[in-house]
Image (cartoon, rainbow, N blue to C red; front, side, top):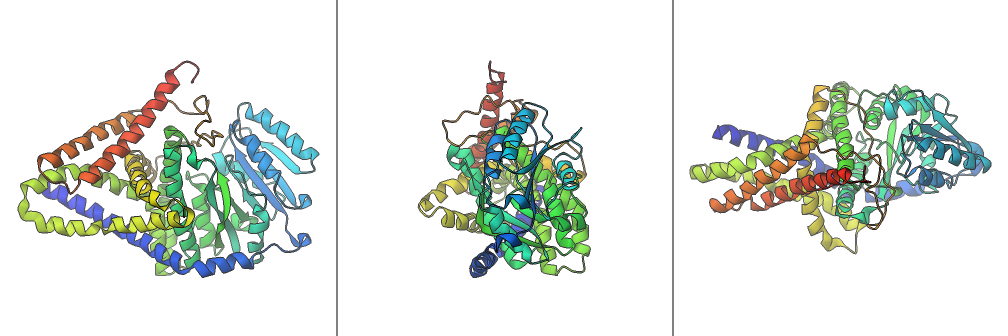
Length: 496
């Protein structure tokens, strides 16, 4: 049994190190491509107004009472010729949102906008189904998509549409910004992680010509690319990643503009963050199962592109590895104390801790660039973000395994709150899931489990995993307490 624990721990550590080597290559690509990215932005300035193509703006919404007016107000400020713009409210709502949307649509119509509130009889295919349904009547050659919690830059279309002068460009994605980053520690940590994805990962993949992903919102599609790739499909929870890969496998180019920001709202409640993470992690696993064979068999992709696609599609599996490493770290302390003759083995295993340096660089670069006046805070945010992701590893591991096994579950959207500052209230949000699940209790049990790891380290006088166990206690404790607090608020009068 002791050898099995050692073998599993070493294997998980090795696989995580290999994945991080892929991230390291993206870091190098990103650092070398600064000049190329800057030149790309300068080359794609908007041309004469009469040469601009027709664009359809699709806004898929479902029960977005708190944010839909903000979204429509922002879309109404888009700087684009009205006669070349139509707006589709793909409204699957079942509550008061329907009336709010109808009123805003009437206001935009009186201002001269071509805007429709498109209703379906059912939510077949969820978001993917709504986008496909709207595409059938869309008038634009290009399709811009914004989720309900986004507030697009007025110049968004003028900055992105020029890229489509290249007839091979099928997708243009922009960088997410954060409307409520300073709301709480949890939103600050989410922004910390997302900034690394939208800086190093997306820019690196774009600069190197690797397969990349549309992020579901804050981007523009060439309509023909959608059709050519087989259209929106709802057999995965991440229809955006799925269609992105299918389009690129058909030869369409992906463009990422790091310099164009698309502000959006971050989840402020733990259960909202969990639902978002569940959808992203399970959807990525479903896409890996669906697409990896096509990628590896494609004669048009180099070995380098296929290897990076492998890392990309299976990135959510890292949560399985993190959970395995975390759980096995406690018995590993005991094994170390009982087998001092295995110290050389433990030394070799310790060499793979270089992954930590890769992660520090990966998250440090965007923080250094985006937060030049707060760089010292990195040494607070990095361990806290790492702790949060460790704390979500059980939840995300279940989602990933379900995705690999092909277990189907409904599309559960992330509740929106329309909050920016810590003084803004959200506890009366009627869309929030306030149930206390068995998973929350398991996260509480793991908090206690890792506390025993701290105690065991003190007892055996082995402090090599002490800081790791502090992070695990912090992460699982944070997730447990936030979830428990939210459930208790839901049981109080007036909070349901």
